Image 1 (tube, rainbow, N blue to C red):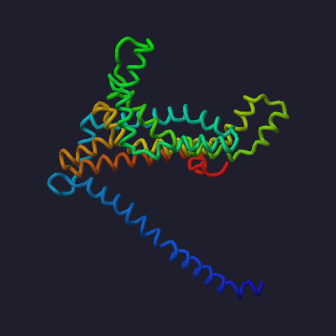
Image 2: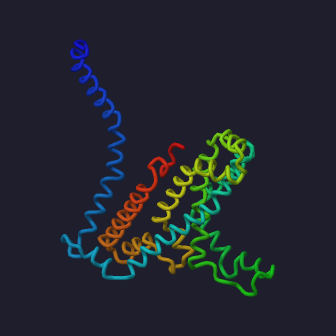
Image 3: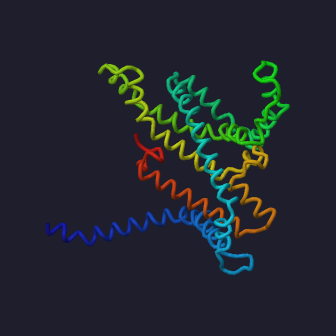
Length: 294
């Protein structure tokens, strides 16, 4: 005991020196975060409280409360984000499951096909969908020739075209973490469930699916957050009829040169996003939302 009491000051001093050394090693990263994240967001908050006369004012926020068009834009943004996330889950989860059941070499080839869209410009992929979905595009032409419908239908410059394009862009962001979580599942668990009398479907829903939820939550979270700030695809495929927050922010800056209104919309979107993630964290463990641990 006397030895511990004697060494206690030295141990505390060594602990303090170690923490100081760790802080010194982390300081470049902390400085980088300050420069590229904290300062710009702080400047955004500041601009949102500056009125047209250059003085401190709440007019930018009051405008969003008074005009119903702003609430409709936010509702549309979250609606598109939720629908895109749901469609990506419906398509991506079965595909990831199929890939996880393949031999490693074949699964790697399939994974390359999932990553292929990243090798093409986002703008090129978006305009490719515009060419395919327009009234005189390939989709309408083939559908009419096959007798699926008699005349061209409108599947672009509306919500349908926007969702098709956004699901195509966002699908890899869901497949990758889900596939990674599924590959990490020990197949012995499924064999044990079968030996205990579970049917394949029961073994899937009681063993495999719960173990894959961390990857599913991580992918869904990533897709949802990315959709909230997406601009190019809804701007091109929506044709100005599906207006999201990002598009309104751009118009406030480019057309009206109103940085205060644009900043206020950005702040509100940020606060709503953080609030939704906080609510989700009350029902889901943090490691599940970030894809950590099984």
